Length: 504
Image 1 (cartoon, helix red, strand yellow):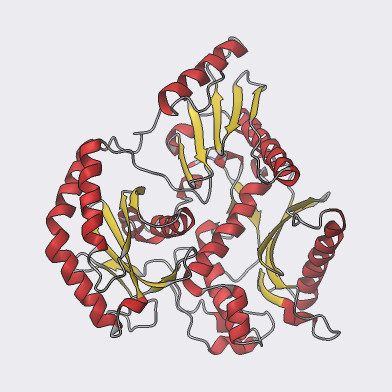
Image 2 (tube, one colour):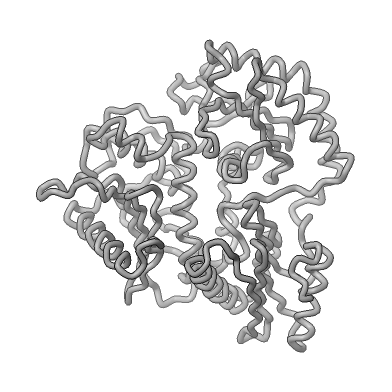
């Protein structure tokens, strides 16, 4: 696997080609190899624009490699080149790989702002390269087992990256949660209210942010902040390792052991991209593992924003909100299985850390009892990790407008036969292509879609899409007739989806 980020506005003159390279993995590739990969990618982008000036290039399938493209920002491209493998275990969906590129860029901009802004701040590119290198390598760390990189494979086809998993709660619990949210909003001084997210376990309970900002913060919380992430040193893709096999790509790299927190893994000692002057920058490492811990007062603390290890008053991290472009302090309070993320506008306080301390005191004084009641009620009503299992069904339900999804528990998905998952992966690939065609033909209209196929093992693989919502399902025991399978989907739609996917 090779992953590169480059800027088409840079390095346009002879002898300056290296200047366009902002990130390249593996870092120990020679400059000639890096330029070869980026030159080919740039040529493919230019060539495909002849036929599709409006829609950016997304994937090129060659005989030996898949080239997956993502235009992260105007003229700034991310490209992943993956060598094809004849083994069925190495089958992946290009949209899922592109989802990895989208996710890492969204998280990067949340913490550091846009890549273009960093390039404008320091035109030689050193600042952007240093931030990109440390951030993406910390991100890729979660995908490695030894020297094996686990890409999202066909075993992952009943999950949707970049979406939020919501906790379903009853009316009384919802009233108590809303009361808590009002207290959180009033914790800030001045006229600007605080935004907040409330999570129970690894599920979202409440948010006051836009869907895109919610998705970014939810993803980060599941990666590094929730009790599971803190106690188990795990990541959101750990379920991939439960299977007997996954999509592996062998790479030759100086990447450290994924469990290592050695400070030797630094930009200055590992980077081989141009602009080595970036090695002198102090770069925050928000994705570095084992750097969040719970303080005695219940608030999470971290030293990855440049403070000394073990400090009592660590610097409060900040993030950028995508919808408003506002910079906010990130303050996290945790009680048992409840994680509360409070976003405090930087503009609210002249004296930053003192103001944050005041907000924390207000929260503890005014919201402690409400937090106890909400956690207790949610714990009583929680059905465990199999709470959203539906007997006889293996499903994925996604709402693209709200960036939400719900799926069968990973442990249940592993009971499916390989042939069923391979068939679903191929079906999802076809649906992705059809959605792309429909979007190009009529961007303002979403096409309704229904596909049912019979796998080699007689399982029914079903996809339905309507009004921005998608349902994917595997029925291995509904092998009598297509009518039987269709009735099973109707029953599921009426009971769990308010009839959204029912056929009139």
